[in-house]
Length: 261
Ligand SMILES: Nc1ncnc2c1ncn2[C@@H]1O[C@H](COP(=O)(O)OP(=O)(O)OP(=O)(O)O)[C@@H](O)[C@H]1O
Image (cartoon, rainbow, N blue to C red; front, side, top):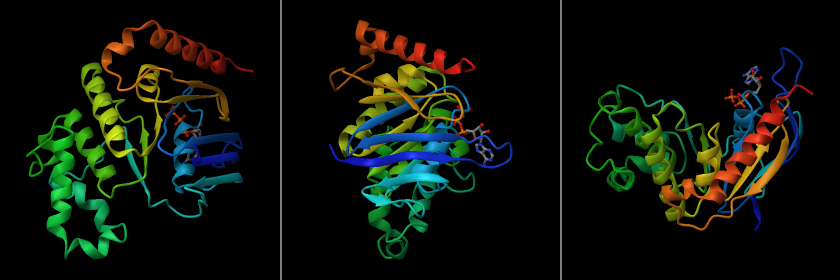
């Protein structure tokens, strides 16, 4: 499988206390693969996302996406974060259309082809269980509904790469599991490459083909596990021996990584 996202021996520091956020970080995610990254708090998971999307550039090492060195924000990526960050004065539908007002070639087409883009946004809303909710404002939606809308916004320009940074961290356990299934189905339907950063080991194992575990700061990859569970997976899989053993194993790796060296 050719690598779609590839970080090679990357070191990045923000300055300030002089300790790098990540150091010697290498990771390759194949095209169409669903990868998850877990690790102790502050180990540089969000930094990895920023490097992979060209929001930060490494001091050392290289970052490549779809074969090209990353030198500016990566257009073929869509992103969703823990906080849905929908603009409260725009309807849900207008929030979804927002990236198209910024990203070319959609920007120039949006006025002429608005109906086509609105139809695309409505189809996405329907796909995540929000059919007919487009005219509501974000504050009229529950937290889980807002996060569904935020996923749609990340997908509106049909990205080849989806980056999810703790997307369900603020939700209750039931809503979170519902959204795992939404992401599972979106990823399967679109065949895109997904990179998920999460504290939740069950989430990582349920969704991913491969889970990478990072060391404590400065972060690098210290373990990698293939999730050998057949697809499509439903929530029942989370009660199987294979699933539980894998989560347990990852938990052990993170506990080790948290020990001061
Ligand atoms: N903009 C910034 N300026 C200075 N330091 C930063 C900045 N962003 C992150 N850091 C530092 O870099 C380190 C890695 O941060 P990062 O947010 O990547 O970790 P994380 O693994 O995502 O954290 P968490 O698990 O708590 O969400 C942290 O120690 C953090 O304080």
